[in-house]
Length: 118
Image (cartoon, rainbow, N blue to C red; front, top):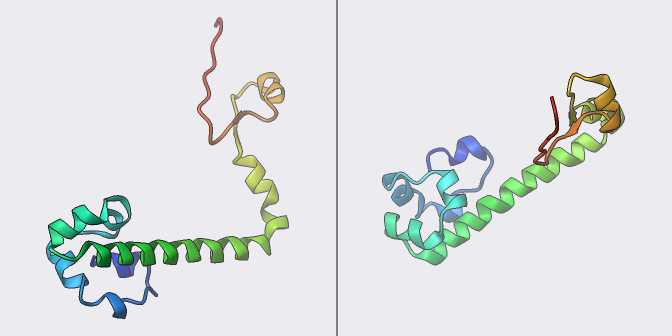
């Protein structure tokens, strides 16, 4: 948990200060806290599972709050970044005819399979 303040510099650790030394000793990272089951972490660090679950939930909420803050600040500059965002929504095939047929290229965020003759 020594990386917690690197991930969330302003995270309020005071209410969880009794958990952090045990988590450090068990080499639990913030990533572990967010991805592993609270019961498994509690066994490794010899802590109450409910307290570990509360800490994981607090870290998750803090991360979501940071994402919301970033997204709200981006909406103020949306007009400036709109063209750049559109450019990253597709990947060019380097064939202008195919890119036009695909609406700008291969869409990102999806698994795409292209088949056919050479």
